[in-house]
Length: 108
Image 1 (cartoon, rainbow, N blue to C red):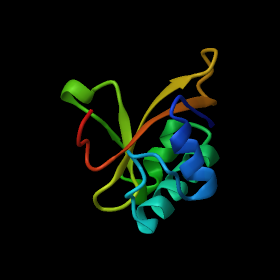
Image 2: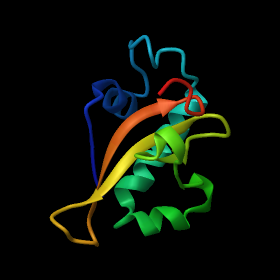
Image 3: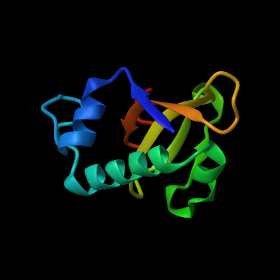
């Protein structure tokens, strides 16, 4: 999948393992490791169905006021929120837009 985001801090967290952003500065190394692992799985997958089959990610399409988002687990408490969509109508390639690393949907 193609991964994109408007949150530069998420990409820095992914590539460097840390960031000075107030929002993500307090995140533990365990959560960062889980986040990197989740993004790597998303990059590897050819479509969202493959993500659903990876049991450890606990993929969910969210409900209620978060129904526009999907999520995967980084650890037992933190989740990565994202949206996915087909690129140019093709069902094989899916783009993923990372939204936020969240302490269980804390403040969206």
